[in-house]
Length: 214
Length: 260
Image (cartoon, rainbow over all chains, first blue to last red; front, side, top):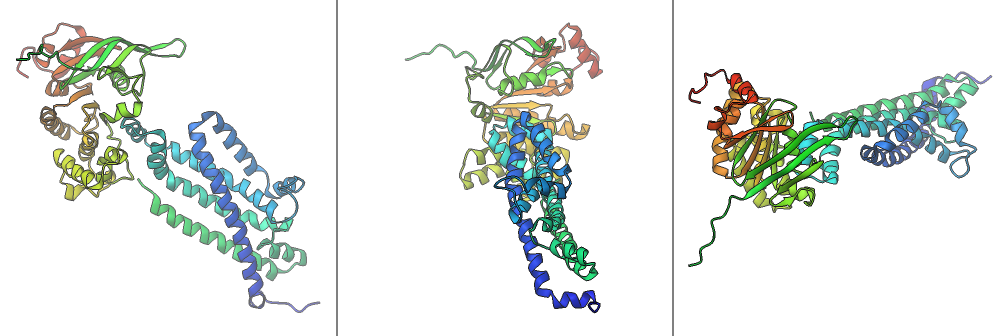
């Protein structure tokens, strides 16, 4: 029997590892979010112009979102090139998860603009591209950011599960803690993950409010 | 001495037997058999009930719609042959809710077309000042405000300033004062009437308000169910004997023949 270790002393003793895992976790989330934004926002802008693709894109994104995260990791592992064990598979899954809120909010933001504003833009002789970049996009920015905020929080959460397929991050502590029945180990993963999510929510919420035009 | 024959009035906009229908089944006719000449410098008011096709005629003029049959000519050229962007930049456009860009300041809204046309900064800045003064807004007080910080009447003034900023020869106005309270509306109508006379632009003004039409128009064209049923100067208009004209004059609640 090992002597009982208090959570606090575990935290202080393993400070470096916890910080390292938090950093890994953050890297995973940031990479996935950057890719998801680079796909989701342009795709959202594209489907505004192409009604035929709208249902397909939004439908597929919502299918990915509906699949339980552990199952999605499971599906990806056997796929050549993107699959396997490790960070790459985890990032693919995180991107697929983050896509729907970003795509949907981009689309909703771009289409939910006062019709009088769009009519004026068209009638004043703005081109489609000018209307998109000077009117629709700036007016949709707060809504798009709200989608990014939701996606970030989801990604921080799902990334803890990514440890199950060897992606590292804070989930590693949680899974190991569950296996070893160690509260201290579980909390070493859970507390930083929760703080990360709360912090991201707060900061992105702040940015969103600054961008809101009404 | 070289004498030229007297110039006939310039037709700025011309409708040649224009119909517009939407291709649903059964196809829905919006306007039908429209022939109309709008002369340089006149203020033509398109009067009619809602759904009579007034706004459709405006949209046929700036290439937001194209005729199903017939032709719309602007400055002698069919709207189908115009580059739609060039066509629209030559026509100021003012709509009921102003449609100001909420993320732009008043100055940026007014500067919209000059900016798109790459005017240099000092020319644009001077133009913003001039336009805001023209519509009765003090540039120092209003330039930096956002549309949400303005009253309805002020927003409409900015809308007019924006439409006039690039000095287009034609001004299209779709019930621009329709959403204002009666006091503000009357004030803007009076001011705009004076402004229109000073500007010398060709103005097409859509309204369902006969009082407004009488105040602003050099000619009133009355639409009923997508067809032109009367075309007359304001003075003549009141004496016309057509059921739709009478329906409108009745709305004025004045006795026939009373001075307007």
